[in-house]
Length: 352
Image 1 (tube, one colour):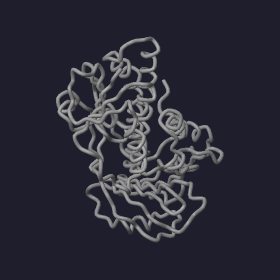
Image 2 (cartoon, one colour):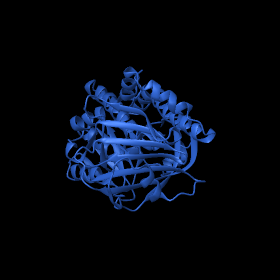
Image 3 (cartoon, one colour):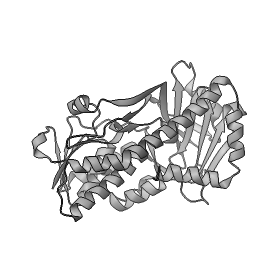
Image 4 (cartoon, helix red, strand yellow):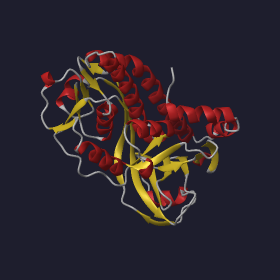
């Protein structure tokens, strides 16, 4: 059996590695090579997704940095802690650098006999095509109907070098009047910063980092990169035997770092469906697309809108200059079952 994947990003390569693990031949189609990976970009993986990655893709423990606690603050509540999450000193999620994961995936796939990298697509050669490319002709023709939202904001990303902290395993997020800022440890000497800033805001990024800095003795603030913040949900997941996948299906605000996690959960579901077909001696064709949409579309929609609701709730608080939400959450935080619910929600997504 042979499957075609369009695109060569992290989701495409991860999916390809999962499929070849089932003995499926995969052609990866991409005109452009990913050669200039931003070394300041990081991503978070939930504990359950790391477990899946280790068992079904390859072991990534050597490139991840564990986060055992999350503390959330609000500028409207005088920078007091309003929420925290932890799980008996166990890992909640982990941070890793995008380029390191990309390099490992390429290394694992380059010499794999089941993988072929190609530049041209011949539709008739495949009974199943998985499209992870947001900019190709197929996307523009068949996958343009989306529920879209423009946050009128930019995410500014950098890494700070700081004095060594052995216990640098707590992530911090502050909801400021200009947007949420997150401090995400990637080692005992480095922490990633993601600051989502509204377009109309005129701010000094370095001054803001210093203002909301929870504990770091900063040695150096590296160069900033940025991208525009938009969210989207695709209305139809497939056309004929072509299945949309990755960011093409759903794009989120980086508030909770759940974009790549959603895609990994999608890979888990797709692999289960593919394995079921193989075990029953059935062909991989457009029925996979239909089954995948039925299993995931409603859950992805609810999850992505939940993230948007959280963002808008804090955004409203900053607009009307009140701290009612922050005070309410601070009281709720005392209820441990609430903390456990949100921890499970972030780790495993929607369970229906």
